[in-house]
Length: 353
Ligand SMILES: *Cc1c(COP(=O)(O)O)cnc(C)c1O
Image 1 (cartoon, protein in one colour):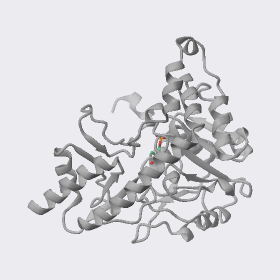
Image 2 (image 1 turned 90 degrees about the vertical axis):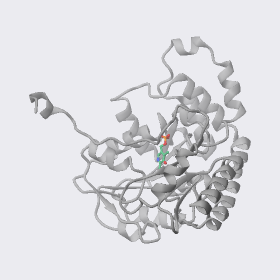
Image 3 (image 1 turned 60 degrees about the vertical axis):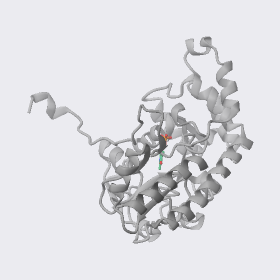
């Protein structure tokens, strides 16, 4: 080992889903929205000029923050924007998880949580989901340094009712409880209504899924003014200009188009419900999903085999070679046409195998 290596921060990084260069595939592997962003985004993009990018952007991203606050009926002082919710989550871990006691999150969940915990040297403990892949709320009623879970959970798609989210928060008033609502728009009730009662609640959301803007990198946290102030103090100690001019401008346009948002999200929900029936007919089993993906295993055929056969056919889904979930495929809900191509292939493959 070279001497300088002793002082290197060593991390095992998060592995994002594949982004193949070939555009000619059916891409159901990273939970992107199959529909384009709002036409208002396109209009705003066309109106953008280069003089706007000559200057530094507004460090507080006020226009975007105001639009998000209006959408949720909260004060702009309760909104913290970031470069995708990954940036917001990382900043929140750094800001709020500084106890010697372990932070708690599910064993099967968004696989970035343990990466950030390792990166920032935060102790953590994983609480196993039950056999039905559900979060057991009582597991979180114990001493800890903070709690985080997605609702609906990823990659399972399983939602816990708002009353159980509240139970977890009310048992943890001495620490920060983060609810990652990356998928809440596809089914389920947001915890935003609990903010008035719980100063220790931080909700994290993203424009990447339900707003069709993964490439623009916009996420945000909503919480009490006190928590948002703490996040801003850390952000301004790190990088004042996290939100670029295009993200501020296009994010504002997207947030203000309620109608288009409702239309695309209901289309995805409809396609998901139809997909559940198709998958069940094909011999798949899965926990009931409230997200824009289904986490399914086949009764007879190993997930890895299906993953590879699908990939050869140009249909990309996500496979995790991890304990407890290595026989599942996470299938993003695409357009009806894309899902039909998936079902057609599976029907043929399973019959001729
Ligand atoms: C997709 C996802 C995120 C991150 O989304 P960004 O693109 O960084 O906003 C965060 N949490 C969960 C659970 C996700 O699935």
